[in-house]
Length: 397
Image (tube, rainbow, N blue to C red; front, top):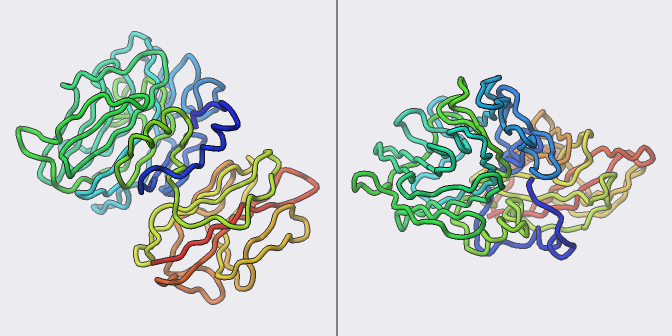
């Protein structure tokens, strides 16, 4: 997460409400391979560098490259991330259809003499449906989208050049209603690009027909296809970003988690844990019960410990023995089991199955009902063995 600590005032704004009604759907902060909002399973291919650098964030190793192990243009593994957004003919994530959506990320284009600039992602096999974002030559920004009509869009003719040897924040609004892309560098509008190819508007379905490869285009088998730059904080949103949103993401007063706004926080702030921070729980996705599309994310957790999410319909406030935190639920409480909900800090995410909330007996979430969620976790303080986030209350439609 590439944001500097500027002042207590700015830090207070980090979780401010966004200007419009977007929701962040997926967010890779590169502290790990985790999609910390959408919960899409993501694995490392090759040897990507996900370590924290004091200047360049999680996805840049200093004077070398970021998501791969390529140095000086020589292939040494071609590492990238593989996100499972497509399964056997059916898109399971990033299916925007004909709707508007937005993308944001940070990238670093090194002035290293290499012809390649940042390779951001690829979920476009050949000329099938999907989209791809990278550069054709060093710094020459390029995005391609194909729909079910076989229409492609490329922005290389716009002449967008990303500066070298510095981090640049990029935001892209995919405006299907007005038939255009709007591209922003560091909060400032760079270009409007028509969503057309040979005069045909791009109006069909846009969804991937392959898994999302982050930090590579055209596969990761050679040095010429892999990332040769820095990449951080890649996020996808379900609506257009407003000007204030884009500026906030660029100057650090907003993060993608600022757009994870499903539900209402209560019973907080939580008691600070051994990281020195109070852990928080956030919701994203949809509050429509029939959509079964609610994601929970816990942030500011201690590193190296584990935890799980809990749910119930009755709010409470009680400090269990051996815990320094407060459980914000009472009565019939359910715990989410299984690998996806076992978190290891500093963030953890889970897609909640609303058809079977694990109380006793399991119950579906129905329109008009309010359910409450929280995250319990082990702490690194040997005197107090566990802690909690604050609570999240969601009233379903």
